[in-house]
Amino acid sequence: MADVQDLTEALDGANLADADAAADAPPPGTITLVSSDGHRFHVDRQRLAHESTVFSDMFELADSVEGGQSCDLTESKCHLEAFFAALLEGKEVTTAAEWLAVYRMSDKYDVKRVRPVLLLWAWRSINTRHPYDAVYSARDAYAVGLLLGDDELVETAAEIALKCEDMDASGNPIFDALDADSQRRLRIFARARREASLRALQYVNPKYRNCRCIRASGRRFSDTAYQIWEDAQSSVGKTLQPATDVPDAMRREIASQVARLEGCVDCWSTLSDKLDMLERQWPSCKTKVTEPF
Image (cartoon, rainbow, N blue to C red):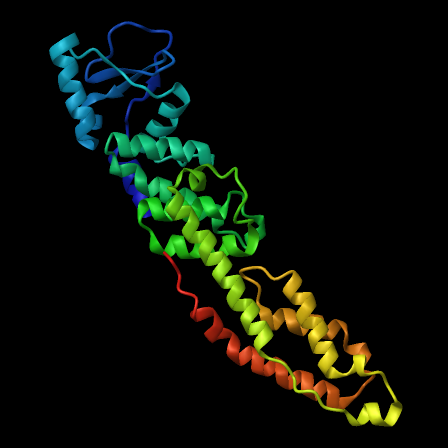
């Protein structure tokens, strides 16, 4: 946030105006930039040249060819508005598509000063009380972290994406713009997490034993702790996601079937011991999956 504040103070008073209605010479100290769809912007020439050597070289070329009055750009009006608003006023972009356009312009024109604004957008998009309420895709935020070199953002967004999003879904402009290898790394990580969870789930099995309650009441074998555990394993395994907390999911599933124990303390003790064992093993199962970031 401090970066954005510094940016706003440093560029205070910047004169940015869409000069659609005035095709005359730009005001003193400014240069006219013309969008691909014909809209004209008067911008502070010295300030823009200071921010970008690419713009500086462009202005020098314009001086030699056209007297430095204007430069034609390949970007549209809406993309230029978003770019200059981020650069000259410290304003955040509003959509992922807009973010991508501003990022590409910052890369093309070598303008580093908009990077804090772009990062702020990504952090805001995932910084909600409930990850499921995030307005924007966590995978887009993950992509922002990769593109701008923010490792903390990459890891935070990846964890949220694992919980909330379909790794194979499309329609996320920034993530979809990543190279195939960068996209594949997140999907591979998601699959590895799920497989590790499945291994942890299948590893812990209670040994078969006849419980006193069965001998005393003639209850069916299917109602023993052994069968209840297997049923819970099967149920959790069918809905297992990369970020599923396996011990918690098993506890909830077994609790939903506790009536089948008919109050047997021995059966419940067996299940409780196995849940505790799963809880102890779970952290090591997660850490064995190397984060490919």
